[in-house]
Length: 323
Ligand SMILES: [Zn+2]
Image (cartoon, rainbow, N blue to C red; front, side):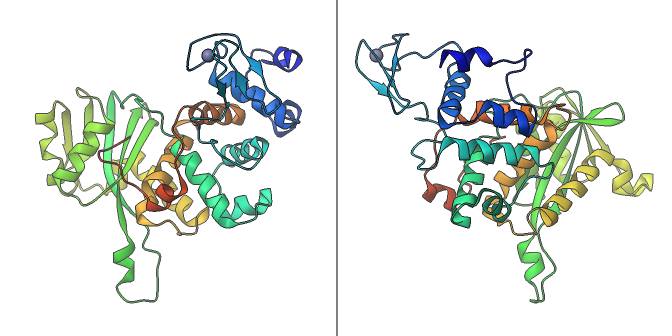
């Protein structure tokens, strides 16, 4: 164990940068457990019951406290809790999910890992998506574009089905020079102020400059502490993609991702989690090493509560705009 520990970080980097390094870092289940423990308890393990800092490792990789005898599983309270599959398979999944530029579908994951059922792959991806949103993350700041887009509604031969399947997604993105900064997105029920304003409040710091089109749903922004810069498209004569280029670029990428990676097969009630994954990926698009995303995902995966399969299937039950 001590040897494993001293091998990392390598050159100050605390995560594998290539698939080859991944193989070198995680040759065994024990190596994966060791890494998970270091990410979860960077200052060293501490007994959750009595606070003792020293602990024995059992043959199954659990910590046994010498003072109170409590045994703690390294995966307890993480998204990996109760899993019957090797942690190494989870690591491979996270590597695969974060190294593919456009993400993966459940079917693609099932094939690559040889998982027995598509249901397992689907449940794993959903568990990981829940780890992609960092609790208490900061809101967007500075100058921000806000607009909506429609997703879903794959052309179907059934009359009237298209409109039924469409969902509205509100998008906010920071303006950084000619490029984009961070993004936030969320499904909204409709285009009313009751739906759009809470989205902006959850996504953007008060005091920020918010650019929107002239839509009435955004009229309350100034009263909520934003510097609202509505642009009347009919007056300017510009089409929306010229007035709000960053949001429209993201909307186009989102549509391509939806149809490409997931072939349009995302149900409305699970949409927010897919948006979380998209956001996670987009906001880290500048990371030089793909392994960095793997590392961030693992960091967050050991911090969120495990979600039983039943609740995963139930879809979004969030009370508020949980960004
Ligand atoms: Zn103890």
